[in-house]
Length: 442
Image (cartoon, rainbow, N blue to C red; front, side):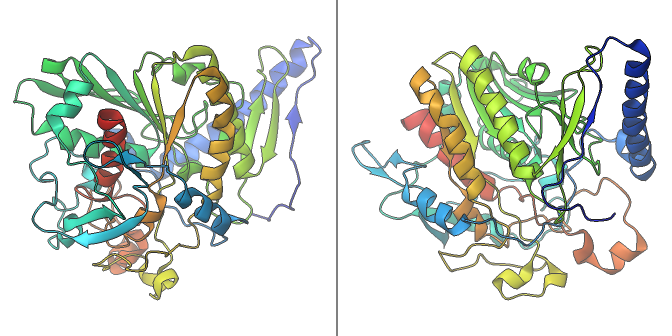
């Protein structure tokens, strides 16, 4: 594809005139575009329709650090984004600043093999990862300790409540972690998991508690909303449409959003297509914007919805950006290996990968800040830096493959190594300890 020039905008619009013929032509052309894209996708990924869940595509990200990333990193790690009390609650500390400590006594928090609700895309031990050292690293904040996890305390906090993780497969990764952290304390017959389209629900009957995951990778309605078949070359969001998704989580008591991964550039000329209006009303328009501009559009619409529809008692969290480890040269390795065969975290506390973008976290904070005046607080969970060191904790080749491997892939395992998601037990358990600190001890 020929690279687009910077700042160029491709627009398609229909006249506001009631001329039915023109409207029908435009509707047909747009429908044809979506049909052709989907048909091509189905031919390549036809087998995916037979599986219950599919993992997001592996991202070959552009190695361009956004301007101001280092500045944003200093600002975010300097703030009390993960503050929680150690002991009595009199002392506050930044949970996001610390180090990884090897601890094969208290870690892991649960058995991945025994968690019946773990998702196959992150069940690394089940799919042949025999080196489980990655499970035994404990996050140790500087100057305080993370609260010891107590599943019963959390379930009591969730009694008669609904908690919903909203976002992409990274958020599904965190949801699966939390379910595994609590399910072993619930007797058989008093818990269940069920699938309903974009919604996965875990229910703890004794507590009348529900922990859900809802697939909405771009927050707004988009052409990537199918939870199974969503690998499209051209991503399109509907700038004014959030109600369909919001109806699935509007009654939640606790909301955890995550929407960074799908806004990262996979190539230098990648842009987001934004649809305004509707064909029915004759005011449809399709624009193209930079990915970060699309991110802003989505979060501003989400902010407006929260302001109008959320009660002040609802707890709202926006998860930090989850790093990927595609470029091994970032830590002195060979790019052709990606994160394959890495067995220990990067020891440098200040390590920052080329594609780790703190500026998007900064942007999210700016967009959500006006809600404070309305009594609505969105807490950003800052776990980006601590996750950046964990080059050893990804599934790589040890996970379920949702499409048959080609001969070329089998000959070169690093070509299909997943360095985006996280093995369980593992790093997302720490993310949930941050969340636990807020829910139970704040």
